[in-house]
Amino acid sequence: SLCPGGKYGSSTGQTSEAAACPNACAAGRYGTQVGQTSQSTACLGECPMGRYGSQVGQPSEAAACPSACAAGRYGTQAAQGSAEAACPNACEPGYHCAGGTARTPCSTGTYNPQMAQGTAAACTECRAGTYADVVGLSSCKLCMVRTYQNQMGQTACKDCNKGFSSLDGSPTCYAVCT
Image (cartoon, rainbow, N blue to C red; front, side, top):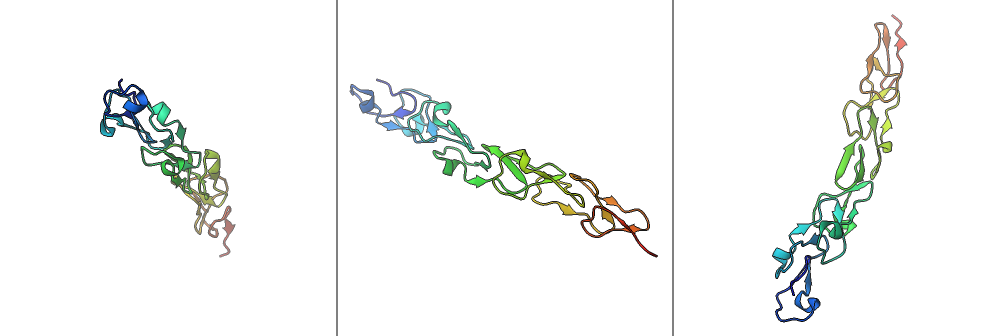
């Protein structure tokens, strides 16, 4: 009999599938073609990055790769058979990862100082006196001397009016005595 997808063997004259097809595609790989006699032709499919499966001898991607990286983790290598191998990366500060391969940066005006965060809620608005002018920051930038920001979640600081100044990270300006 012909070997089913995900299995292979070259034994002829066998009466059972197990005897005729003793070899199986490894975990993280699969084969869709029937009647294959070698691993190189039987196991051409591989789990995509961020997905994995521990079962051997699977005939489809859905059967071989049922699991995705957990929220807060992501993967960059295909054909993996375990969560540890498929999802070795914890999401870095400044990002959130829903699982799989996606790393999403925190938007401008927000930051995330923590590792392995899985949702956009991890990105917090910058406090008054600070700003985030680019995506993916792990901390907000301080407004410099003679600038301020009196609102949260901003992408820039405002200049103090003439005759006023501020300290680094200030939400307000103060009058300068002349």
